[in-house]
Length: 550
Ligand code: ADP
Ligand code: ZN
Image 1 (cartoon, rainbow, N blue to C red):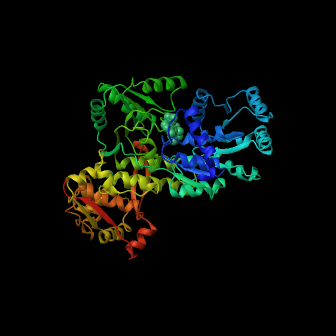
Image 2: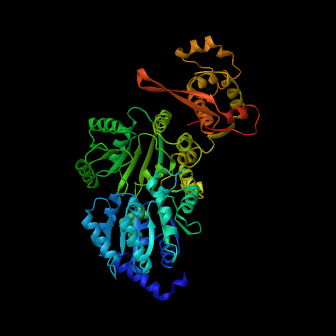
Image 3: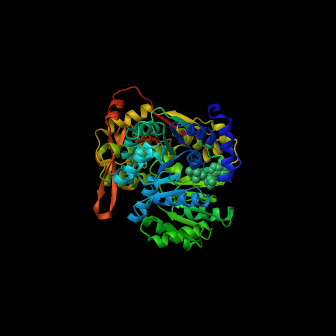
């Protein structure tokens, strides 16, 4: 840090105050900014709201030449551009919406002897598609006026991310094209597992960049989970209205239709709810957004498109009516609550069946089997998060991003997660069982069975068949299977959790079959290769955590 010298350090604080109106730096902003000013590459991994933009905007103001920012969405770019205008920082945006005359005017300014642009925002497709832009970049580069490249939402580069964008792969060429002198590259993101960080750095050629990571712990968010029952969402929103009068929240749904259904349900119960999804026209969407920003609507029922780039500090609750596609997605979406630091509520309404619906969506898309496999693993991780009864939810979330977290912190905080709350109330109510032997018994038999669902297996395991399946069990001789009735002491819920554990750990695969008459789907359990090896004695253990009394 001393490398920067006292002179520039004064300048740093002066500009922070004079240009941006802030008195101090937050979190790890200062370290990142100093390093960036020293022309290093940098990878900035900070949660939403931490203040990533300042990390490149302040250096842009203090550096000679133009800082080029690649950003994936027009709305995000527009947002930043108007902020920069307000602060009187010379900024332009090159997007496909601009007329060619307007684009040409920007190119001219970039080519001029002293470009009067500090920040230039571009969409990723522009970088590769426009020869005009490349020659403007080359001209700047030759004259030492290309300050640095900033790649916003950098995780979009990685195929392993939940947000992969093919256009981002073209950013690979930036490093080699502007190699001598080397133009520094800054990657920014709010979501990346350690694997994705490595992948992203490799891809854009900043393998050795410095990493600036700030904590992903959100102290003011209370994470909760409830089984999804027919009217649970209405009850929860009613409670939210009492708890946070005049404030609003988001309910995330899987499909447009589901948005409508939930909104109708809430409206009938006397609340103001609106929908927001890709099916609405621009005008309606802007309208809904405005009313919501002004707290004139209690709830927005939205698909994931909603919230990205919206900086509403007082979102008091985020409810997931259906499963998110990944833990990262869940973290991002819940992260839109409580950006002002005040207590806020994040609820997952969980139903295992939703994971099957999600899987159907993946299997309908035409992606490679590798990508599909990754999506499946992501869903399994979400299911594990939801079926978990013993590990602190904050811990599960932040450890997903590679951060270490002590559960005691959650347990003693003002907003402990539901798991910590229960554990605090009744510390001895949790037991861990080694169910490896039971698992092997089931897997051995399952290899010889056909067209059986997890639910049916759970019934057999507990020895408690419902009327509909009793006949099947009788005719197939399933009542004499070695594992029949062995789980008689378990609750129905726990026996299902046991079998789902075998799914998420990769021993059982549920193959989906469409039932055309009902437009539905049925999932039949199969033993995987790993499952066969396990049943045959491969060393491994399966543990089940059980709440012994509620
Ligand atoms: P991110 O991109 O990490 O989600 P932003 O860059 O949009 O976050 O910043 C979030 C909010 O924090 C913005 O309103 C911004 O003005 C504010 N902010 C950033 N840095 C500081 C700071 N050092 N002091 C006070 N407010 C800040
Ligand atoms: Zn906790």
